[in-house]
Length: 332
Ligand code: TXA
Ligand code: MG
Image 1 (tube, rainbow, N blue to C red):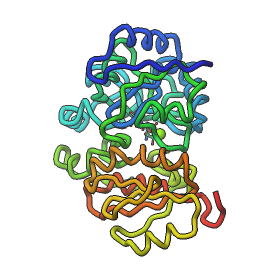
Image 2 (image 1 turned 60 degrees about the vertical axis):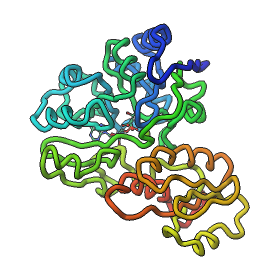
Image 3 (image 1 turned 135 degrees about the horizontal axis):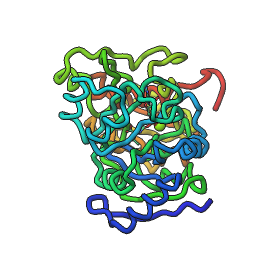
Image 4 (image 1 turned 120 degrees about the vertical axis):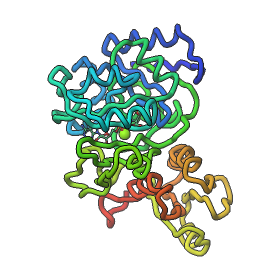
């Protein structure tokens, strides 16, 4: 299959381009599109055969459920079996935006979308291209991150092509995404945080009260099936050094032919060392592009550990998963 790449203006996407993409989706095809978090790989959430194609294109394990993307509350209510007060309050505060809600699944939604679970994840993205595409297609879109399963999520169209070129129908290229890491996932009711993201636990609690943290649940049976410990990982081995520890960095870099580094307080030297901003939102925005770039050239990536404060939680979570080897003794 040839993957068509179409450039669109991120704020005012060309309606003729959107119509072509929407037509592919309505026929059961696969279109990668930008959201404010990462690029998603869209398929009609109402067509089991489209979802089968999506799982095959990603090489995604059948046990890992998808997020259904909608334009807002009205459409969300049609793909869930219940809309509790907490959903109402969270959607009013954070939608459209980087927050996914896990709610009871209605019988009419194909089981394959939720990997057979009794719940469904829904989110209304804020990116104008995502919103316009869902609107134009007129159907809710199941959309996991647009990468082969287990690899780093894409924040640019070129990242999508790195692993999905020739496996999907189309990519809408609207430039780099803003948030840079995947949405916060929260299950209701009771409220349980399943994946850390741009919307923090304290922000959720300010709206709905106590939210239990299940983001560190045991890796073999996580509350959210996609949260495998080794995930969001480049092919290169990722090793962490303490923040500001120039000596540990030098030691980690020494003697290795192809070692890159992602830093934020220490200075970067040479083309394989990338310095990201020393601020969590801007760091998150650039993190995956840095991992993609270094993964092309390096066998090892040394990462300077960010501060251990709540504002850095989501970033630290992704780094921990990237650094987690399946088997600590075996080289990868
Ligand atoms: O920001 C995002 O959420 C991006 C963009 C494209 O919207 N999407 C994304 O999708 O990251 P994906 O498929 O890569 O991650 C979805 C996560 C997985 O960890 C999955 O297990 C979890 O959401 N999830 C989906 N449905 C669930 C459910 N019913 N119960 C618990 N977890 C669920
Ligand atoms: Mg993913």
